[in-house]
Image (cartoon, rainbow, N blue to C red; front, side):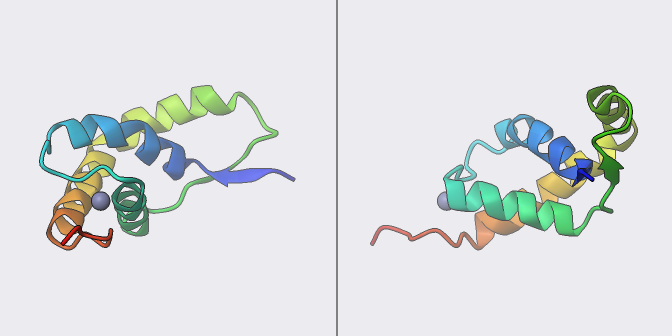
Length: 91
Ligand SMILES: [Zn+2]
């Protein structure tokens, strides 16, 4: 059985939109991953079976329902990561 947490898809699809509002935030691979992980840890996981129904239609539906919460959590995560980046800072 295939299953996935579609909250991941929602966060990934919104990440770039929210990052545009924070032009000073680093967008290296490390920081982007940290933002996604932080946001996902504050959002309820939503699992679906990928064998049932039209997964993308359902993600669109869930995205419409959850987008405000998701955007808020991404914004909070960006603020935390901006203040405490874990990438290797150049001297
Ligand atoms: Zn970075």
